[in-house]
Image (cartoon, rainbow, N blue to C red; front, side):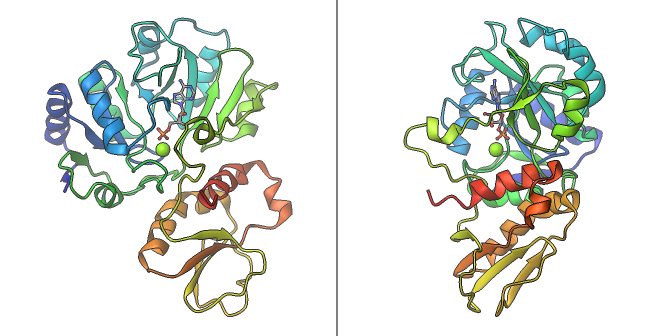
Length: 317
Ligand code: AMP
Ligand code: MG
């Protein structure tokens, strides 16, 4: 099993040593826990792909602690970048830029771009400042499974692995970063914790174009962020007392005996979504259903990321 470190100065030193010796470390971020390795250590990066069983064409986000580190990773700095950095970093916004050729291809998923962000988490920032080099850190879950928002979630996804985890308690935003490409016209590639409305204030023409990574990777499923128990959108199916139901403040279906209500505030619901899916999974019910928020809410920007995760988590394959 992975072993837990705390967040003290000596824990950070231990994590830096481990990373410098080529290891992988579980790290807290404000979004979800990550599995970190030095961006330029190809063996350590390969280990991340192996641990997660992640398709080789799915690139990793690089984390930095200061904007001056962008130059080491990106070839071209778009005009809009300084304003974006000022407004959104540190925070849950990943910016995709044209990569410098010396950024290892494995980190780029074989492409010619690189995703970068400064996370807003004191422990991770201390780690990044101490090691003073970019760390690649995808979410610390097995590919396609629910993302981890506590150190215990990380341990449960990797029960037989022995890497250390910096345990800083539950994460704060709960959903992943928004991924914004500035290679060409500004385009959101993944919905996440930074809202489209906030991005539009600086990039009025930003569009959303979510490439379905999973469709592009042969042999992998579209299902992602998913519990192991069958999980469906509720549309009037009969509920038995062996079924679990996830609600967003609306009324439960008739006969529902096992109900989890995340409420109708999207920020609060986003924070708890993954931990709740994991908890529902552990109760060993037969089928899980989600009653979607009503249509008026679905049109609202702040529900987009949650709806995206639920759509992917309920895909059949
Ligand atoms: P994860 O770290 O597991 O939350 O996943 C990272 C997400 O960022 C994935 O959806 C990646 O496809 C996306 N991403 C990372 N780097 C890039 C990049 N260079 N271009 C496009 N998307 C990226
Ligand atoms: Mg992930």
